[in-house]
Amino acid sequence: MDYTFEKWQDKAQQLDIEQRAFIAGEYTGAQSGQTFDCRSPIDGRLLARVSQCDADDVDRAVAAGRQSFESGVWSRQSPRQRKAVLLRWVALLSGHSEELALLETLDVGKPIAESQGVDVAGAIYCLEWFAEAIDKVAGEVIPGDGSFHSTVTREPVGVVGAIVPWNFPLMMAMWKLAPALAAGNSVLLKPSERSPLTALRIAGLARLAGLPDGVLSVLPGDGRVGELLSHHPDIDCIAFTGSGATGRRILRASADSNLKRVWNELGGKSANIILDDVEDLDAAAQAAAAAIFYNAGQVCSAGSRLLVQRSILQRFKVALLEAAREFVPGHPLDPATRLGPLVDQRHLDLVQQYVAHGEGEAQLVAGGRRAEPVAGGSYLAPTVFECKDGRERIAREEIFGPVLAIIPFDDVDEAVAIANASDYGLAAALWSGNLKRIHAIAPRLRAGTVWVNCYDALADMNFPFGGYKQSGNGRDNSLHALDKYQEIKSTIMQVV
Image (cartoon, rainbow, N blue to C red; front, side, top):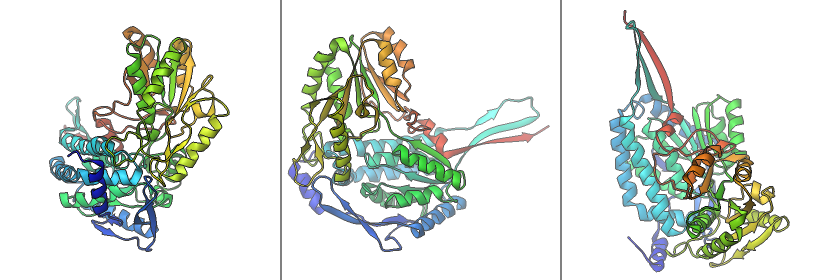
């Protein structure tokens, strides 16, 4: 249903926000009684005082996850039975989609149209996709000489710790939950302390759908909860999306504990390459603006490096700045808003430090200043720099804000060299009207996803998502995601 700004504001006033952790099938406060403040980046107001979990809560959740896994109440159900429960969860999420969208917008400042049409819709699609897929994934029978009957089968890995970020709280949670639960695991979800609200809400809906107690727990809290999960000797796997620094800590924790499997989806500094034979320059400019200003640039695959062939640089820059004018900071509950606040004041301060540094090493073309469409919010105007060669700090480090670095290049080899001169390799894009040129360049880009004449086309669950180099390991989405949450077993039986 399409609501007006006023209608969304009315619904926000009536919202009942769950603040407690979800452990062993029930909502419960932290055993310590401690809470943390959850504030909206829209205006800084207090939304909830959420349970701050600690070691006692983690141990209880892990024990519940282990008990549920070993009992087989979920892990040994048939794929068809698990599918039925997950599809009931899909229906409940769909029935509460407006509530979930509103929670997401209030919690992280995401424009309500995007919360509804992208985040909630995408999370529901993800869960439905894996629910429908899981009873169609088969093992193998290995051909032999008749003396042995040999099979390769897949089994759930066990108890999974899923640690997810604040930029797409619901969608990133579901990218972990859907394949892990479909495969038969028990999961402990740790949402970011900056964005816990949708994770807490969907846990109760999972219980209503029939997910057995202990199979899913949600543990809100700060980084200490993630540390506890990463070091816990009774967790079999950690699936993480977030910063490289935290990813490294999780790997070290795995090495120091039980060598649990660790799947890291980390940062990016993705190159969006515009060649001089681009067919529709205006469309490419609009896509380039959306690639960095969508979600206020808080996207790991954001097109934060815009590589433009020098012969069309001036024309393209004019078109880009025109497209950027569509991203005017506004109140996220207004359906017309395309650019909301950054997640909080602390993150805004960090991004502004990058902007200040950028003004000393590159030309500020647009933005760079705070905006205040709503008093008390953490808003930044769309910001564009023109760099000299791409070696500037703002062109190398992940800023995670609406800050674009334009980098000129002269020929294809230079463009490929600049694109690949990064610690990251999450995504890249290439714009050209020459099919032969596209086929020659795309394989040279060291990135897990390469878009051609488009950007950020991630709507189809059939495509795996993940990166090269320091962008992480493993893949989310597609059947490949199941590999992270399953063990592969060879069974060899002598029959003759």
